[in-house]
Length: 391
Image 1 (cartoon, rainbow, N blue to C red):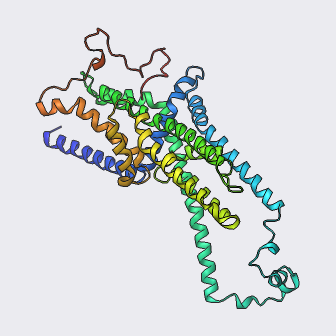
Image 2 (image 1 turned 120 degrees about the horizontal axis):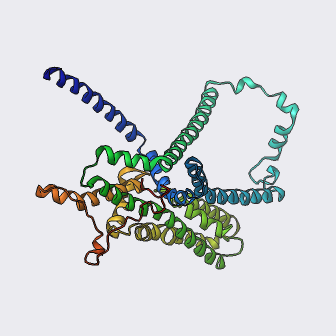
Image 3 (image 1 turned 180 degrees about the horizontal axis):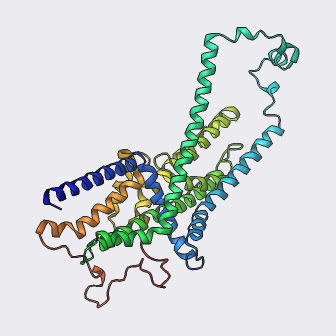
């Protein structure tokens, strides 16, 4: 093949490759939050998967059981919360709280006329079929459709997250070996960089789970102590449950625990205003302790310490703080990932690039220099099963 035709042939394939790469980047950009959260689920589940893989041979079954084991505590907690809420609702219903005749703002005559079937049959429906009424009805239907669509889109995103984490658990080791085989070099630079990044990703994302557990423990302790000093009739309903739900909600970026303690604070404020307004100081105290002790301090101080074992705590604190502000809800996961990628690039690759020297990865752990001990990757396969291969 002539050189001109060969260059055109390669140029065509390069053009196709660039177009496919751009399309892939666009998909990732449009759903970056979904992919980032899927990676978080993968790293949070991987320690469970690697232990189950030793006793459960089908990799697909081990991955499915691992995902279920991660979600099981949250499902049990939500079920427990719904059972308590249903019990409270039944208590109010049996107590007559939902009886319209006992509501102060309800006109008894109007209620009787609405409840009378003869009155309903005599209504002139044409007076309600006005243009304004039709527009109001269509607006309500549109809002209902938007709500259903929002829930459906959320379910699709959740499915993609779980599917991504499932296939990373099952096929992550093969993917990592393929990348190293196709794009690595004889000095092992890419493999060393990938292992360092993988190790810190595991620490950061599993640290988020640990942070949720510690935050839930703080919430249980704080709310239980608060209930000791609560005025009569104004105690926090199911204080330990509220604390545990706050810990689970801390995994949700930006809003997080506010989804739990803000509705509880509003509920306490309404109850206090209707029963004893002098007890509203307890509502203010509950909101302040929730925001400062249960929400802010663990998120800004505790999370970097439990996540950043090999990274600077200050840099992680900045990443967790500015991530949601820069990227939105997924920034709390994406920004630490970018920090890890940048730190290890600057540590392993950048010095040799600036000096023009061949890139040489570290062969030993800096902490074992001079001791005669060779560095062993904690993620290496030690039992020959393939279950501990880094992804």
